[in-house]
Image (cartoon, rainbow, N blue to C red; front, top):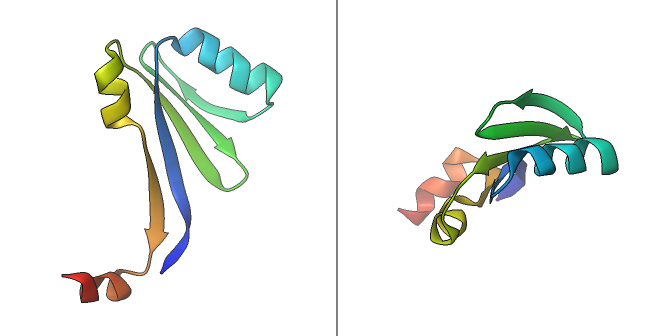
Length: 77
């Protein structure tokens, strides 16, 4: 059973614009910023943005990670 969202990672084409939007417009709390990524906290959830140049790479790397009970997942093996 899913207990919650651990983090969300989205690939973007422009870290500077992304950082300004999420910090200044949405007022999320910035945690870290580099040339290739930036991280925010939204409530209890981390949101990460990672620079990707190619459109196909953006689709492959973006993801949501859930917190789950490991014992419950064992039954799916």
